[in-house]
Length: 438
Image (cartoon, rainbow, N blue to C red):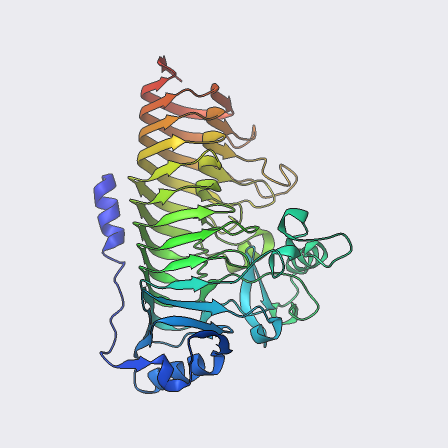
């Protein structure tokens, strides 16, 4: 099938949820939008009432509403007025009891994500208002263990907990026994819908997450449209679908402290245990500023990634390290295939335009050889950068079937670095004014 036919097939399965026309005004349930009053109970009461009546819209009017985590129930649209902000509490106790979620691709029980669902359907966050995660160099971010995010020597940080969680997963410790939360330092994601279906996030601004900002896990039928996602904390990726199916991201603005979009499918043994790929994803008409990568696949990739179609995206920042990025290794494993980048404009960039890297983090130290194949980059134009195309694989598993078509790279320092690449096809590729051939 053609690019258009495959995209059309995916979009036929991305259908926005529909809701009852009942409205539930948040202030009717005790919320006060002064930025000081704790509205956690009001959000819970409104959610319970809307669910009891078969769903509808919870209306958040003008004001700033301080709250703990919001746990979604089925058939509810959280509508945030243009002049409204939901600001999340910096009190850790608000995020207990612990809930099932994923930290860097590994399941555990931990502090609740700021917005969360488990096994729910028909969920939406809409309007033109703001979700403020309230992460800063005094709250959440210091747990990264870096001084630029407020950590000071001798203070607690995530390293030992992160190692413990990963070791528990490798030893197949039951998820129910992977309990973190109080006394531990693994940051939750901002919006993490879990094992849920029919999701719409539209029009809002999301900022200052503790960690990954919008990170659905094991979800189906997701649409993210006209969302502004900003925040320069540690690991504040913009949108990370993790083992999800049928996803559309369009007309969004990203300016982040880590990857703008990172497509994932679980980490190492835990990713292989769940064994659910991320697949059938359309990324179009987005604008990307700062970040480690514009569109990234990995590194939590053990469940594989298939069928990604990116079209008409613009990337523009010297603080964006890489435009199109694949990161994996032989500890992760997994298959990456059928990835299409079309009509990409890179106005400015820090490092690589396209990088496929099998030596990310642990490198070739595991028993799970990754596979990368069937990648097409068509109609790409870029300005600046250190390297145009950096494709690096192991001897035993070359990157195969790469097509570069109608690509024009201006003012790049190094045109191309290739290591173990087979069936590379170049058609009308021009780098620094010279025709490039494989």
